Image (tube, rainbow, N blue to C red):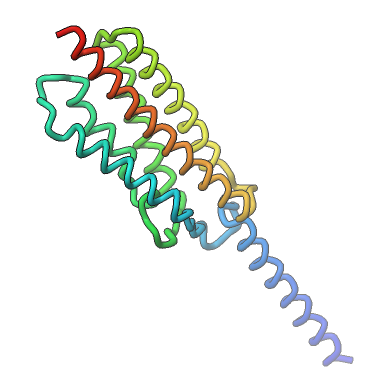
Length: 191
């Protein structure tokens, strides 16, 4: 009788431990999870395209005079886009500290874009592209905060959120490129 009771007790404890480990794995950012991280494995095509766009932008504007506030701010805006998790072909472990760092970079970029909007005067096309870049940045910021507060999201949902966020960054980078192109075109026309 005693051995049957011990067997049931051990079986019950084993079941509870297995349930806890399973729930921690399924919901990695949950409050009860021991290892609050997820491994994000980006699509190789997305990474390749993203890195190419970033390199093109950097190469096109690194030689521009620093007398121009708009071009000068680019080096600081690029910090948001040069995050390792978006440029790595290898899986990257992401935890809450990483999400906080992403949120910080996005907030800084938003502030830079807003300062450009208020400190500089742009012609209509560049002004419209800057407006789109700011709106897109705000959408990214919202997605980052949603990801940060996603304690009840499953591992699969988090993977999707990271992938979507990566795509939003790529779209934002395209908008930034378009803004700088419009700015340069309109600046050249006025000279």
